[in-house]
Length: 443
Image (cartoon, rainbow, N blue to C red; front, side, top):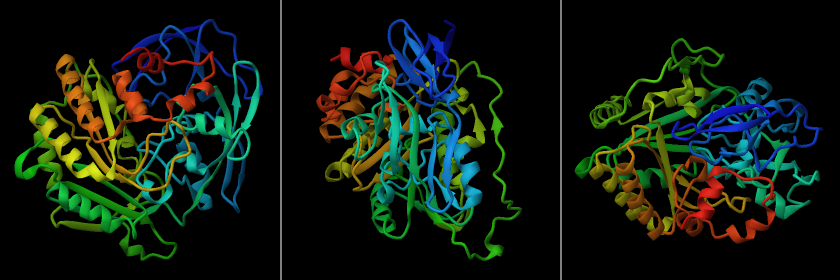
């Protein structure tokens, strides 16, 4: 059995695993000692897709398309297919994923297991809302078709179930009809948190996609300032003169961070400088134009292996959601606490989740405001800040996103996910993860 070292996307966790190949979706699970866990393309930030001391099933090897109905947009594919591969197949035929996270380099199985969300949650809900079914292979050899009509509880446990219910071998989903690769987008500068909430409320009816970059480096009058981005897919008939100068229909290419610097390139000085320049990057307060889908949905994909810029110690991402009734006050406290700490993120994202209910028992999205930030790993000092942020989130009745987590205590997880007891009976006894053992064994 081959041994291989796997690293979290945040590059904090690094563990040796038994690496088990998956030659075909028709085969049974490989024989392994101890526990196992499906591993897709490794884009989980913490340890939810690692299984230190156990085995990882190399699910990326299940990478075949099964069927695509160009008339209805129903796609069947194996669980290891990337969203990027789906887009390459379906976009020329007028279709697009109905929900996509901030990177296209995630597998379908990973998107289901984390019930990923995108910039259009208020309009479309999370990824699992568009999955019509999937085959789940359990450790006892059972192959179960899970859908809203068959094995409904296992369907709900697997969506957002973090790979703990078994191996998803293939899935079926409904895609979204689009006319072209372009987005009709507008970026609006806002100067405080109140303006963000006003823009969010005003935009949700007319714009399918909304998201904001927020400056978390400053307090006082600059607290809560940022850039609000809202967009729709461009219509079939549009003025060619509106296309960006030099625009081409092909997707732009990507650069790559060639090496890991000896220290993090993100620090207090670079953060404040970057945030100031980024906030003032456009002249007028509002700029509208056509934008290719890739820089709109996947800006970080233009820099491959960007996670290296945080240096050899890596980084943590912290993403939370707080309910609407306490969203303004809690978000303000979070930003004030982060600014006062001198630790922050230039990749800070603020957006609203809408009313569409998630299907998964452990799905992260729920109505409210979600804030996501990256922090260079600074050891105990950073973990002290996280404890302060946790208290604010829990007092507001919120929760943390497991796909981004590498350190939340068990009590924070249990407080945020009230359907945990309903989920537990569906865990496959042979499937586990480093994250699962950590939160279930800690207070």
